[in-house]
Amino acid sequence: MEPVRLLRITTMAFLLCGLTLGATAQQGAVKRLTLKEAVELALRNNLGVLLARAQIGDAEGTRERQLSGLLPRVNGVSQASLQNRNLQVAGISFPGVPVTVPLFAFYDFRVTGSQPLIDRQAYHGWKASVQQEQSARLSYTDTRELVVRQAAGLYFTSQAAAARVQAAESRITTSETLEKLARDRRSQGLATGVDVVRAQVQMARDQQNLLVAQNAYQTSLLSLARFLGLEPGTPLELAEPLQFHPVEIPVPEQAFGTALAARTDYRALVAQREALAERQKAAHARYLPKLAVAGDYGAIGRTFATLTRTGVLAGNLTVTFFDRDRNGEQVQLTSRIQGLNAQIDDLARAIDQEVRQAILDLRSTEQQVKVTEAVLNLSRRELELAQDRFRNGLGDNIEVVTAQDAVAGAQNESITALARHADAAMALVRALGLPETSTLIDTGKP
Image (cartoon, rainbow, N blue to C red; front, side, top):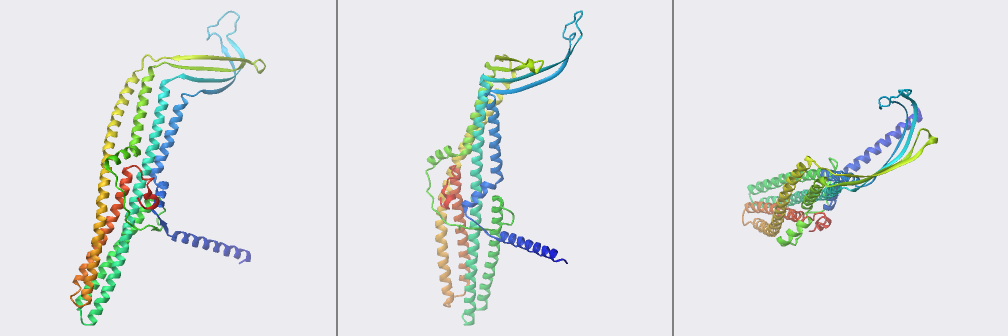
């Protein structure tokens, strides 16, 4: 093999090896996520947010098109033609006059323009498009708030799953210690083989529970990564553990007023109703006079040398006397407004319910956190006492195994209460219409 060719092959091999190692290292890098980072990823990649953003562009285009009906229009027209005419068709037939005019050239260079002066229909149509754009923007914000709520819920679920893995690992450590104690007590003749087997069974059960908890944790990370729009198989790790953060609970009546003023889904419906009201005015204006001016200015002639400047300025007044379609449009718009009013009233009641339910859940979960924490401390104390009794030969390890189960149950209840409290806090923030501005997202604390 030639030296140059060998050098090329060797260089390509090193490059491919380097790219492979780089890709493997990049794929193997664990991405540590805070709650704020998870929310930012969701807002950047979630399909619902992208579609809602596209609807804003559509509404902006509609507004621009409606505005164009109120603005001047200017066109440039150039015409150069070579033609002849049949005079008989035009009604000109005299002796000695040829039937067909010979070919002649014709040039016309002109600028035309028009400007509506009074057009209430176009004006209210533009105002309706402005309100519709505002509704689209509010709907986009509402979609973002829903995505924030969902991303936070998935993050809390993964936090709870991670806490259960840690609890299961701690229980395995305890089971190993108690299994060794049972074997030591048996070697000293102070325990039976049943005690050892019972401790080993408990340790095996804890190992099985750890496998289940690890699988649930990885499954929750897959769901979180999918919602955040990350590449499949991206290794994730939560940077913030599940913790309790006290939340100031508002007065329901005051919270409802705050929610109505802030909830973008409610304001979007109100903006839609305003748009329909403007369209009603536009429909009524179809019978009103429309005044516009139009004109043109340019040069016309048979040859370039004979081009003559000409122009016209005209005013146009248009009045509609009969338009049956207007009545049908009015009935249609009235029906839509009635439907929107019903939606707005129903959403107001739903918001009130959401706020009150979130406040109830927050109060309940806060008490649950305190109660489950106390139960967990008591169950741990019970395990310590049962362990001391078994170590001192005051009984077998049935009490120890029972206490271990009590600790496991108390840990799961405590983790569930913490996750519910965090989710309830986020639900209240969503009910108040303030998820993106909440300090819960920025610092992990409500």
